[in-house]
Length: 167
Image: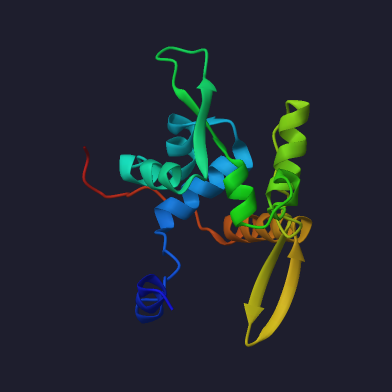
């Protein structure tokens, strides 16, 4: 065996570990490419460190494929063939579908926005001694009307202060 093989046995190569920032940035580029650094920052909500971008470029996973035709002409980042090979993907459509991405992608394609629908939004749930009661809006409105009418009928209108002394 050669000297190199002995050294490789002594110090086996460990797969590199990537920070959360690197993985989030890579995911955004993979799913939204081509994308500018500013767009990545907008999605992540924090500034993208130069070290993060350098790490991805050094690994050969992302590269600048052009420049956006806006003020400042920012670079457009996209994934590379090396990225697909390292992750054993045949193409970008092989990426796992994000749960929330499908409706958003369809809406974006149509120039629309996705609206969240909460089926329980019209039903108020009340827990009383571990018994769950569902009350619909009409019951709540009727209860509020009854409550208001009971209060007004029970209220006593105070009489003005009457004293014997003239004012």
